[in-house]
Length: 341
Ligand SMILES: O=C(O)C(=O)C[C@]1(C(=O)O)C=C[C@@H](O)C=C1
Image (cartoon, rainbow, N blue to C red; front, side):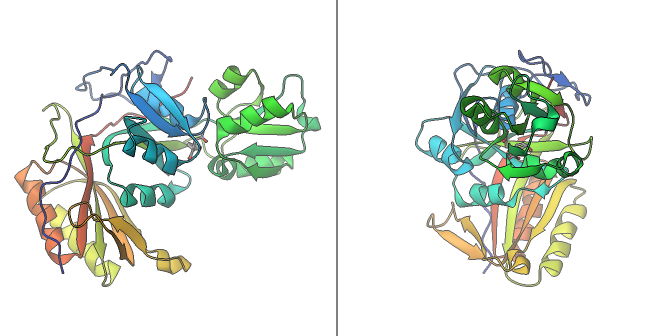
C-alpha cells in the first residue's frame, strides 16, 4: 500500500560553508555568490576517524568554528548525535571514483536523523612515511579501504600491498605510535603535518578529479519546514521504496519530476539482491518508528523544497504509486567543490 505523504521532519538549516575558512580552504568551483557565510561556534560535529581525517576536514570546512568529535565508526558518529554527545554527524556518501557509499546510506536510512547540509571536497591523497624513511624501504601501505581503492594504480606501481585500517588519519597515527619504518600511510597533507610525517608523494589518486561528497546530519525537528534564505537554491533528498520492477518505478519517478520541470541532481537504484545481499532496511519515522525492509529502493536528490507546492505535488504523486517515501532532508544546495591546501 502506498504511504501518504506528509510534510517531513526537517532540521533547522545548518550554517552554510564559508568560501575561505580559517584553515585556508580555497574554493575551486565558483560560488553562486548568493550564499551567506557564517559559523556556529560551539557546534559539535561527530566524524569517523582520528584528528586529520578527511571527514574532519570536511566538517571544519562546512563549519569553521565547530568542535569536531572523533568516533570509531560512522555508526558511532550517528549515535553521538542521538545521545546528545554531538550536535551533528558527518558522513561521506559518494565519491567520483567509487559512486555511492551504500553502507553510509544504509545508516542514514536506519536512523532518524535529517540531512541539513552537504559539502564536496577534492580528496588529494599523499603517501606518508616516518621522517627519513625512503620509498625503497617500504613493504606495505595502510589506509582507509576507500583511500586504498582510490590509489590502486600508485600501489601497483610501487609494488606495495595495501592493508585496510579504520581511517586515513588513524593510519598515520599508527605509523607514528608504532614507529613503523617499513610501512607508509595514504592520507592528507594535513594529517602529515599534524602527526609530523614526511610526504613521499603527492596526488597519488588514480584520477585527478577525485571528489567526495559528505552529508551533515542532525536530529530532525518535527513540524518544522525549512527556513532557507530565498537566495539559496534548496535541494531535497528522498528515498523511494517499492516492491515491483524497479524500471517501472524509475520511469514513473522520472515522469513525476520531469512533468513539473524539477531538476534531479542524483538518481540511483539500490537493488542489493543483485549482489546476493539482504533487503534495504528503512526506519519508518512517520509510522510506528519501526524498521521496514524493501527489496530495492531509489535514492533521489532534486532541486527545490517540499514547501514549494510543485515539489510537494511531485512527491505526493510518487508516494501514491510507491510503497514508501521518506524525506531525508531539505538543505542549501552547495555548488562548490572545496580544496584542501
Ligand atoms: O578516512 C578518512 O580520512 C575519512 O574521512 C573517510 C573517507 C571515506 O570513508 O570515504 C573519506 C574520504 C576519503 O574518500 C577517504 C576516506
